[in-house]
Image 1 (tube, rainbow, N blue to C red):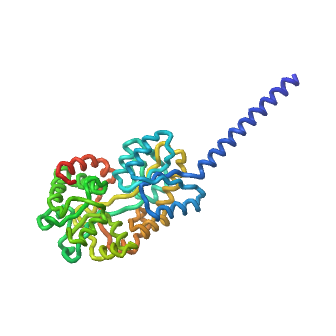
Image 2: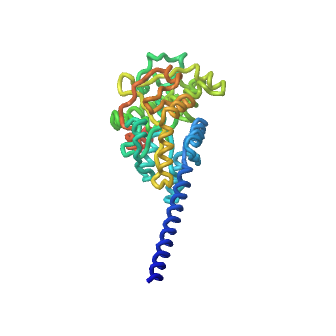
Image 3: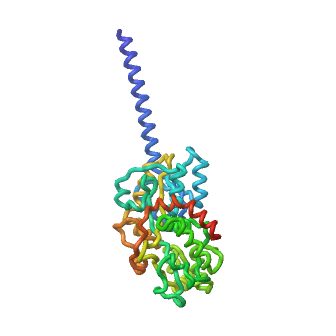
Length: 350
């Protein structure tokens, strides 16, 4: 009888020891997970890197950066499948974030802090991505040849007075695809197509280069007005390149459609990857980047508008004045992306 009791006690001790080892292993695994987050990012700004370092200092969580082109990163996540190390995908433009969601690469997350810090119109309706910075697609003009009184709307740039004077980058650019997608949402496909065709007729040259190249083309006398993102203009005004500063100082910035539907805005944002192994840390990084301090840093260093309404824009952005935004869900930019590309092809927007 005693031998049986001893045997039972010995077995119980073995079971308890095994459970303790399992708990320790699980605890070690949680500790390992709690120390890193793998960020696949299409943003390549020094200010972003500085914020990641600050996040590491404050939380002890290491940010492992994988940088690349947005579409290439999306393809990489698809290719890697369940084995991907990606925890968080960060990119510019709601259209790309929508694409990541539609491809089943993101997951819904719950965070009261994110909901508090990021207004509803700058995040996905299913909580799969969150906007972190905002930019406006504005009209930049030659102050020697154009007065603000001559400007009004995106649509007005199709009028005869602007023939041979409009500069903009190619239709392959996601910013232009999203601009057209917003006009489809507001005006319908037919009117949006008429706008695209009318703008093509008024091009000063075939589209080429990036947004800053359009500003430089104005300075070179190629055209008089350009459509570009606001933060590029801010970067030019504060560039270390004296020639860029000189170009920007000769130009003016105008927010179109203030008396009608509002200026087109878009975001840089991020979503937690569906197979994230460090989900909680990815959410913590999102919460950090949408908090007032980080939002203020984005605004001051990169001339982007904060999405957090508790944070004021930088002094430069304030100097441009307040403006009315388009009142549409950003998800519509993704919904209408395929239609935008089709219209661009039909009207010959290269």
